[in-house]
Image (tube, rainbow, N blue to C red):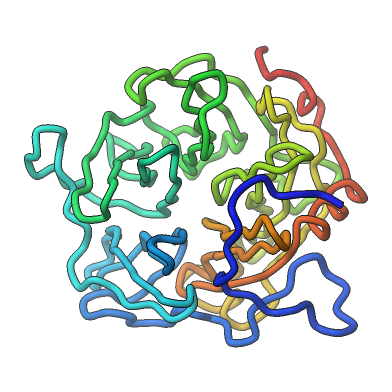
Length: 338
């Protein structure tokens, strides 16, 4: 029996695994939970992050506005399924309280470290780069220094410091559409200066589903087996790219080392809302809710760059799948200091 190390969350969304269903992850039966035109001026919400807050749920959502430019919107929910969104996008300020809006912002993650909530997104820094902001009350959102130079995407913080350092996963790339495609780890004492960069996982493997690129999804989940990460993998086909999802376990003390990594897909586009949309054939995980008492996990994912889907698994189902389908890359088990 594997264990999630954390708090209980008895009111999280949950549906039991369907009878005779053999996969490790099963979809919410009323998916998608967020459809088209969810709020005035926003045509699509997808690739978004949520977490528990004041006994309910709060989230930061990628809102594709009707002029096509993405921004981040705040959402509230009593049950984690039915959401109400602020009409206006989040207003960021700098550390002096002055207006400091990103030119655009997309694919946010939301992570609590100690008593502060951090939003990590992809924005413009003379090229695609990671943006970072903090809040303690979801009323004032203060932008911090951009962690890295362009080009970089899929930044996500670990939910606790390791050896007194903030830890962030990201995927560096060039000025194309992320052909580098590998996941790296970086450390910071203060969220201003980042270093001790390590490579964590490389794209590829015996299967083709993660042959083009990979990227971390929700914040890593601390377990007694190591840090559990859900991540997306991308393959190329004669009809374009396909985004699927799987998982890996990282070493607790040295998370640039991969202990186990599933070489097979846990969830791939199969339903209409995953196969048809603005960008077809996309399953893109961005957030996970966990209940340490029961081992339940609810995963929020973007579907076809148009909708938000919800899926369920347990820590036991996931760890079993990872170990049974374990396939480490050439340097996965190393510290990543090449």
